[in-house]
Length: 125
Image 1 (cartoon, rainbow, N blue to C red):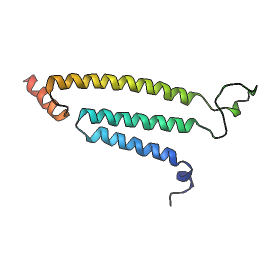
Image 2: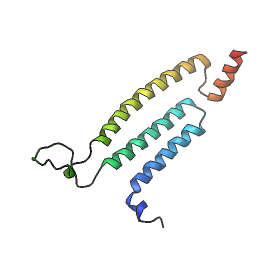
Image 3: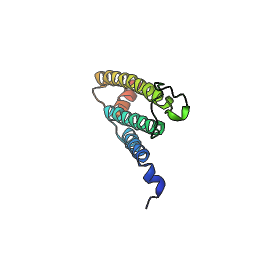
Image 4: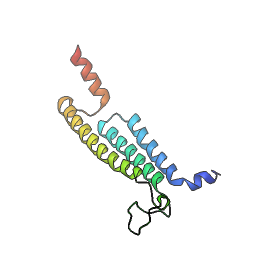
């Protein structure tokens, strides 16, 4: 029904579906915490996709232990490094977003973006 490409790359398709779930949560919810959760789901799907693309079956980590120096024996380490760097950036941005959300809640006593927007418009008048 879907063809051999989808059957061979089902994990990548799952990562794209997870990304779409996070993106829809980011777009459709008004609550700031739910938006942050949606963003984290999107991040996780992206890391899963990068990890899947960096893995090659039958190859090992690029640590020369047996004297084999042929590059075709090893997995490319760059996707793993990108995933680790992305996780660090994601944790930092999540902490910043949560801190801003706490400040907004203390000031406006709501996490709904529409209500915060209305309160901001009232302050400007």
